Amino acid sequence: MRVLLITPGTRGDVAPAAGLGARLRAAGHEVAIAANPPYRNVVEASGCTWRELPGDLAPLLAGEGSGSSFRQLTAYMDLAAEGALTAAAEGVDAILVNAVAPFGHDIADRLGVPSAGAFLQPMHPSAAYPPMLLGLPRSLGPRGNRLAGLALAAAPAPHDKARRRIGRSRRKPHVFHGFSEVVVPRPHDWPARLSITGYWWPAMPAGWQPPADLLEFLDAGPPPVFLGFGSNGATDQALIIEAARLAGVRAVVQSARPSGSGTRTRIEVGEVPHEWLFPRMAAVVHHGGAGTTAAGLRAGVPTVAVPRYTDQPFWARRVHALGAGPAPVPHRLLANPPRGGTSPAETLAAAIRAAVTEPRYRQNARAMARRLSTEDGAAPIVNWLEQPRA
Image 1 (tube, helix red, strand yellow):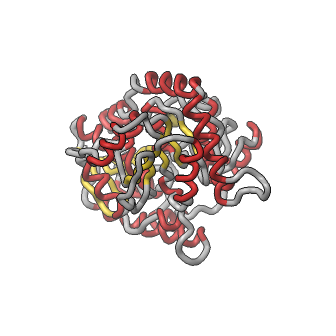
Image 2 (image 1 turned 90 degrees about the horizontal axis):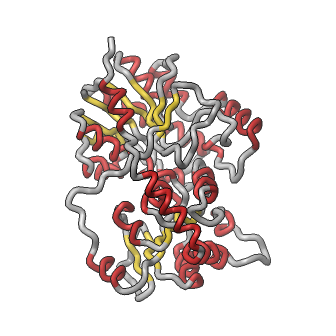
Image 3 (image 1 turned 90 degrees about the vertical axis):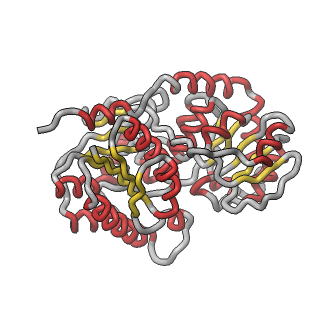
């Protein structure tokens, strides 16, 4: 079967889709993934075919560009929908769409092929959580969560224009969620068409080898702490380095443009597969995105989350609730600290110290990793693809 995954978004959206795609290929399907150009290598490293979605969401999330964010996102979605139509026209028997691409269901209906959601976050209105897109720092309570979710679902969305142009589907498709019920129990108010499968782990790039200087650094002392902020890359690098120094830990600092410099206590790296790197860390400090949070739990190491927007506060709260890391450090406390309070570097350093010195965080993280290792998140989707259809 020819399967198309439509995955606008950032690397955190594309990498799990590529892992899912690799698993579908292993089951005998032909898999193409429609994604923005910066992530072509992520798709092709998984063995899947890349099909272009024009545009790049990362600069919009970083606050770059001009005009209102809603207008910019609408333009981005228009490009993504056109790219998805072109990708599907190359031949497809089934379509899987992520949470920001509901127009994929419209395309599937136009072509007369089945489609399903492949979400990395719980998006359906529920009493169990506030709306992901609002990035709220705390729950609104069961009634408030559900009302806010229903209100957001009824509000104008950046993809509305594209959906009207394609022809909006009235079907309510099945939605698979690529995370574990161990991490997020299935809400009691979800309809039957929503299911939780387990994680879709990113595919390890074929032939990848760790840099020699990174291996030397890891061998030269005790396990370091990883610090990297993904789509929150605007986080002050000097602040991060100072926090590691104050915490008294060796650090692997991820940078979009690593300088190549390093010391006995710090090294800068570019993209390194989390599935290789994280198990070698004493703790991981990151933005709380869905994929990076999953990688930390899979590795069995404590997490310090520094959430900023959308689903990041939700995952940060889940990690803390599971006992796999200290309370989240909201990004605003680092970017705009209150006057007369603790310095941003010390605020982050205190969380890092707690993560590496309090045994319960590592014990809980390891227990979580053991439970996740038994799951096969792709199996329900393989079964869905292979079920008989009229």
